[in-house]
Length: 429
Image (cartoon, rainbow, N blue to C red):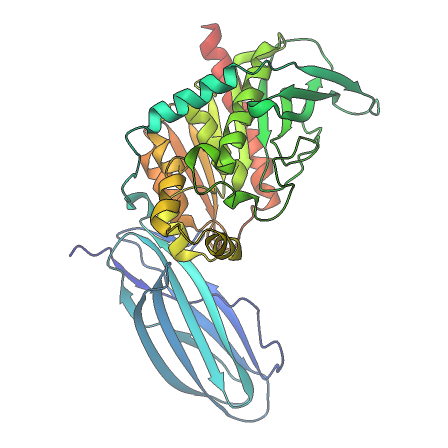
């Protein structure tokens, strides 16, 4: 079996010390920027433990190394003594990771003077070599061709209403409404630079139950903050809005909840391309979580997308996703549908799994990941990413969970302007 280098590993404390007893203070020190390691890299990491008391403390640290889907690989317990007012470092034992992927490093610290605390950290080993098979069914392409045809039969009936806003704003604001799949009305906020001209456009798509709002962030591009059905002021699906919307229709691929959302995003692209002030060769889509998955699917189904930005993306590698995560909504759905199994559910989801769309994406893709994400685990996102054949790059934030820091958005807008500027020159030439 091929191995991928040696790594001396350590667990990051979720808190910096004991929550109930400050006798021991524990902190993380680590010499790596993003928590992603490659074949010849070694991480030197350790727990820094401080005894704040005037007496000696005996303690033990149990180190456990697991796969990100909770399979144990190694466990070892180390007993130590820390003197009064002493600070010491304790290292995780050396471990050779067997395969590319993401791993959980856990440390449980036990001392008579303090309650037991378990610290956990996820790290990545050669994530660009993760390779899970597609599970695309034979009728996958025809299913989506038919769905797009169904959408084309719905007259969009675009309605654009100007909204008053303060003079100091960068842009003019419009509320946009349109008809989408099944005749649902979906809506969003269009921000147009005050100076007349033809501009690139950014389509912002929502995370789960997110209400997209105007951002007034720039005067050099058109921004459409769009709400799919069940989001913002757009129409609701049958059954109303609730936290279990995402499991609706799992019994049948044609009735699954995300069919409508995928097609809503295509309708938003339709709208942007009708505008004379939009450069239809420079349309980007950007979303996070559910929106990251929608960015992937829209870029795959619509070649009019020139750039796909997918942050902490959902809807990738469902088989592994459900090995790592647990959601009560799924248990409730199975209870209400006793004739169905994981096999039938995963069959439906295969038509919406972004890994099965990856070979259709031809535009550049930028992906952002929170390494500690327990909602959309990084290993699932990399399955889709690694199947992309187009230009691509990713950034990992080692301390983030299901989020991205403010600096990420600032940097992305800077990169987006550079991308649009570069592609404007290509188009003109």
